[in-house]
Length: 511
Image (cartoon, rainbow, N blue to C red):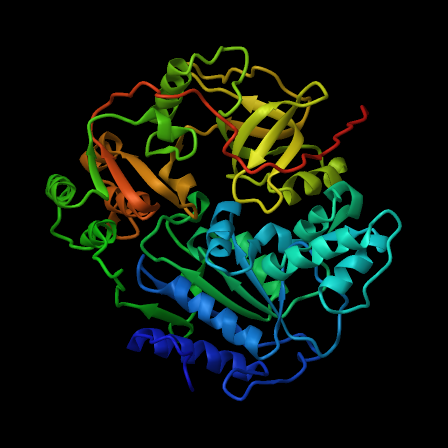
């Protein structure tokens, strides 16, 4: 097997060859550049997991496998458009559990989408579907009433760079409500699936994916936290040993990465919490990418939440954040961060649920509040990491307060997407996300260490610290005191990408 031009380490090369061998068994030969049609009975090579700690090269391998598959003629399916089905077509979908995790991959040039956007597919207006087919290379350039040649040229130019059908249609002056008429649950299986951040998969999602993809490769970190409802177990742990590949070597940047060094130091079974904090102090003295913080920096909280373990800590920090910004109790201020906590809709409104989720409002999505919508109970929102980020949705926004069991709801639709405040989040909910700078509230991890809890054979505080630290891309602030800075500027929304708001109508009939 000839690896790509990029130089792999031995364990990366072995992993690449193992996945290539699996795909060869499914009729996709990367070395020979040969494709055979999918098997008529829908079977494939099954499921394989490629696991390793942060810095071991999982994302690099995923990206190189994607490039190799694209070079031999495998079509990449995004969540926004699939094109017409062909019996001999081989396809690849690259998935992540959250918008933020998918956006991290897209930033690195990998066309990822969320698991939800693959489980539910868009239904296009037939007129505009002709543009999508043309952009995807499956049809002639169309003539569309109301769209000029200049508009079509803009769409083609955008698609040539970004490979996004909705983005291209938006560049031509269309809104999502013009060309997407609805959403439907996927009925037909796909072909090859790559799933990043697979440690976040619960059993239900894993089973759904196995039904859809006869050839499935999971990329995950065994040192992260398992989903809350999984009792410490991750989906890929159930696979046979010969179907799990582990990357052991940690790849460093040209300059050593002190954040990764700290994360991997946690593997030492003799390391105690106090020793670990001394390591952080030493690292902070040597490298500006690690900061020994005496307070929470409030300016960062609007875009990068403070990571905590305890809910009580989360609520106290949120209340302090709102207080220093002068936010009134009965209203939200533009620029306040929110976290989607799910959708409250009865089963009979399934289509509306799909509309909301398809726009990126899935549980755990990070959102910035832009102001009230045109209808009572509606909010204008910017969904972080979504390809079409700005929406207007029926919202139920809950502001939790210290020592109060029931949250305060400043305003709400009767039903719709529900939100909690997002200035601070639990480390569990932060999985799958990364930020340039991350603040970790160390007193919470000290409390976990004092409790002596063990999860999956590891002290809980170490698993929490590992996940929290590896959310930081460039800078880690280890906050050791329960203090909050004053803001140096008011909350803002002008830094968010300008985009037309896609209205999500939610008319609920009584009875």
